[in-house]
Amino acid sequence: AQSVTQLGSHVSVSEGALVLLRCNYSSSVPPYLFWYVQYPNQGLQLLLKYTSAATLVKGINGFEAEFKKSETSFHLTKPSAHMSDAAEYFCAVTTSGAVSYQLTFGKGTKLSVIP
Amino acid sequence: GAGVSQSPSNKVTEKGKDVELRCDPISGHTALYWYRQSLGQGLEFLIYFQGNSAPDKSGLPSDRFSAERTGGSVSTLTIQRTQQEDSAVYLCASSSRAFPNYEQYFGPGTRLTVT
Image (cartoon, rainbow over the protein chains, first blue to last red):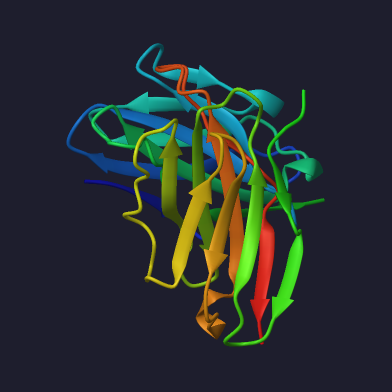
């Protein structure tokens, strides 16, 4: 079984400040991890993914995430927040052992950026 | 190229009526997923199709829910005798299953409101 926990349903940061969105996963086999972003009234857009290559993954819009097996974490960061980053962010996991590679999502973190 | 499309974008229906939601995956993608996004439950997997294989229906919440995929392309999610708790955004995703460069591309969703 696999699961994802996102700490903090709401995070607020000032424009230009560091963005840190936390994600911890549980999986009995090596995971594949994803971060998706959802803007209001839109579908999910892939930000970045970890598929067992480099542990530091760079994505779109200046985001990156680091896979830390010892901490079972895959936190999302961005050095400097922009107003356009305001959205909801979802961490998701699947595994090579999953029959259908279905994604298991966290509950989401809504990011607000304060001018 | 064209992304995943879903129709209708919004659907309001009366309790007890049947509804059909449509998904057009990215051309050439063999895997298709349905998810449900609701306030109380977050993002939940519903059903998965892969080629001509039997679908993985393990996420369907009740026997009022069914889905089919015709010709390995377009999919229809049907909800019979809708209930108010069925109100949610229904998201469709498709994937090429090019493992491990695996990712799911999501459509914009259908917002279903049951009155």
